[in-house]
Length: 170
Image (cartoon, rainbow, N blue to C red; front, side):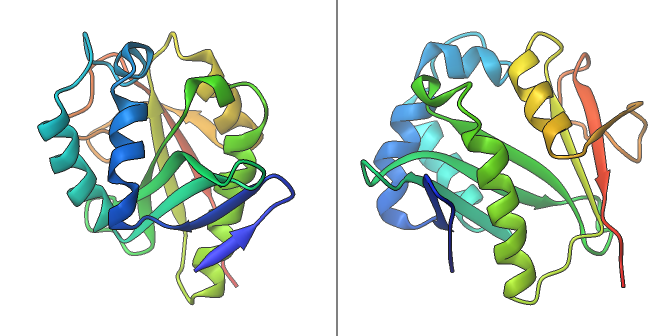
């Protein structure tokens, strides 16, 4: 599964992406953006990678000019609700602020639809100080929602901001 934009390629996350996944998530700024206090150990990142790679939809974001992995987009089932997912994503810090992630997420939606998948509702969360991610979610049509037991999960920071995007069906 591949979807190209002018600057990016979105494709399935594959085993050979592990080193780049670890490299990006090991940056201290990424740990902070994910709510951790410092860099994360490589073995824990490898464990996360294997779990992420087997999520229903797991995509690599690749720069089409440099041909290297710059981020990932991940969809996790949301509380056993059909066609409802939690969206997660990360991007190499030097690629922040260039509109890549919004374009890549839209490309992932096209991939999911083209492959016969269905999205009804998406949820996403971020920390209150992560204004860049909030702008990405706004560009993608997400709306802020109050965290309730139907929205939040047990593993999310208590102060996370939650957002929802509903897709028209039919």
